[in-house]
Amino acid sequence: MFSSLFLPTIILIFLAIFSSHFSGTESLEAIEVARFPEPICFLNYFYDGQSDSIYFFGGFLDVFEDTKNYDIFSYSISNNTLEVIGQFPKDLNFAPNIHIFPSSNSSDTLYYIVPLPSYASSLVFKFNITDGSSIQIGTIPVSLEFSAYTTGPNREIYIFGGQGLGDQIMKVDWELSDTVQHEIVGTLQQSFWNAVSTKVRDKTLTG
Image (tube, rainbow, N blue to C red):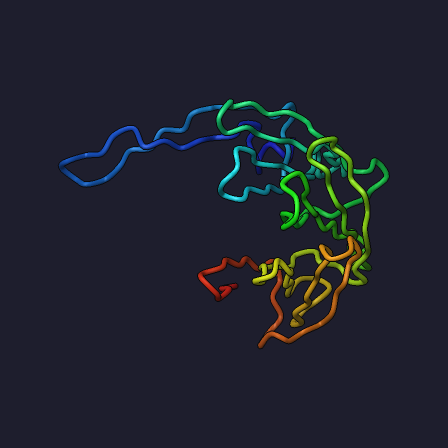
């Protein structure tokens, strides 16, 4: 299957098992700790760096057949368990790269943006971790496929590049009223496609 070439069915934790006093290097061992029920490629994940859970969204079970994964998984770091905690709406025809964000108001809530493969728009959902429900709270009238993003000081989201934005920077906010507010707030020196970004202190690096 095509998908098995891109993402293995297991989650790997890499542990340093010893340090060499002679070379100063570490040896790492890969240990299987959990297994997805099927191979999934283009799987998206979210981890806040502090909690016990890593969340996995979307992806494809078979790219050639356009068979999508509608299950949302949670992996417990302390217990090494992987379980399905929710599902996307079954009629949602989504593109691979889903953007996932935490809530500043509730530890039981995540937000995710789903670009549509038509390149016409992106849907914004509010996901309840406790009961596994997803509620659409808005639509962004451009595709955010292949876009990169960063968060601002007040948990607002800045998204740039990709299929729909090109060289534009969009500010998105939804926490004040559970409705999606969005506006173009700047431009890049050039268009980015499938860019990656990371935040270093108060700056965002992308390329």
